[in-house]
Image (cartoon, rainbow over the protein chains, first blue to last red):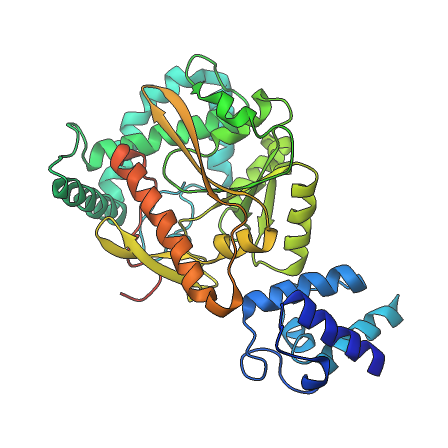
Length: 87
Length: 313
């Protein structure tokens, strides 16, 4: 899980060009959007596309659970490993 | 294209149910355009008399066009009035019917500037941003005429249920070129990117604010007053990372004339100044839309309070 979180942080930095942020600086539990890193809904979509491509998980466009999955790096890692286990 | 008045355009249910639409398709095929055109005036008169808010919307729009033209020392062409505006809408609807029913008589529709679209038949896919000015349905007809031109139209699932149900029986092949989209999510973006990679094109309308996401709109000057425009199409453009063109299709002297204007390649919304970049793109779109409204005032098919649609004003 820890490895996956690290991988996701790197993905986040790469996809969103967060040049001045390092993997170490991102708190797994911190909210990704709004406060925290200050990402917006376009960032969310870009991240969603990247996650969908890399991990082949199904992401509902408009559900509350999706919003929770993308709430933090920890949530996202849990969601991805959960989806993998379900396969 | 939708006719009706009301608060927000999408609150207006499509007038006439599924059976009405089916009946229209069937009679069009059976009776042909001539009979339909004869019926057009009484039908238009009926809508004109009963559609109070649509009438008001048309009046407000034409007044805005007149004021805008006056600034340049020009005036509205003769014969431009609310009733003729509704007639133009009816005629546009007939053309749309003809195209959807696959009963497109070569004599009643001619395509000038078809070569313009020829350039899109090979190579990578592009995003066309259109509007409810003119008739974009003709793109489908083009698609059938020009080999190798495949355009996927994005439509809102919520607002065209009737059309979609009718199309399922009347013209399933048309349905294939429509992508129903309710919210822009990762799945949709990936589907569209795949289509672009395969050389297919995507078309979206840029002049209607989503009902579900009214807050995702930006006001831009339009015919003298700020009007709300949806962010979605422009956000989509940036996510698709493809060439973006504005697409207009006007009926001039019975001929459909397509014009395609390069808009961005690609549209970049840098995160540091995203809001400003988005606003600039929307302002540019609104400017071009306005220019086309001044060119052909009566081909505007937004019969609702265009300037007030996003808020409660």
